[in-house]
Length: 248
Image (cartoon, rainbow, N blue to C red; front, side, top):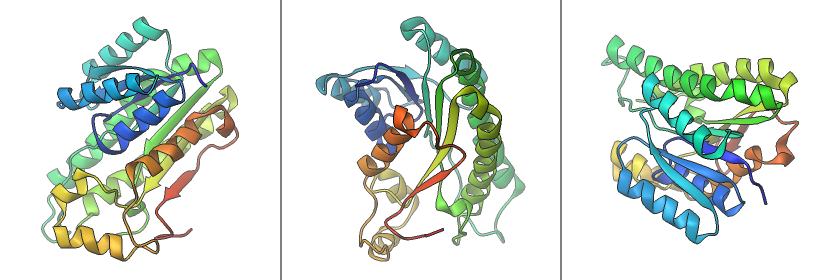
């Protein structure tokens, strides 16, 4: 069991909620970050407590510097440090072709995606360096490397974030800090259902070699490995959780 402190952004539902619960079960003290879903976040906190863990819900928009600063100040006051950052928060995006794409759609997504990753990483790295320990984990998508119709804003923004993470990994490695990416295929949650037609969601599951969508807890357990002591020599990598859909 761990007594480490983890902050999970976008943890009120889906992958973030599953990750918060798995980490709590493993003994992490967990910050359940949310932007607007307070009841759902509090339910995750209750589930963590029922599983024998400890968690607290903290509201913060991860694209807002003051919100991010306040969240980490709250965490440091409560638990004294942050050992693990899981940056999972979904930054909204438009599904569109290039023909219909505006710069506001593409540039806006790029700016928000990188700003959020920058803010949360900047908030935790100095403390991790001072303690010579840290785990940085960022949720990405195979769309950053394998294009799919309509996903130009998400794929381009995540590709930029992926490279940002690799540069951070290189710089912090001498300090005992790892930085990695986790790339799930389409997850069986409400998010894809809201953005894609029902038939498209079914098709994505049917065309996977394993014949289904990935489950949130499967992604969460991969994140938990990267958050653990056991992953100390794994850094700058992207772990695919996609059932064989895309093999590198």
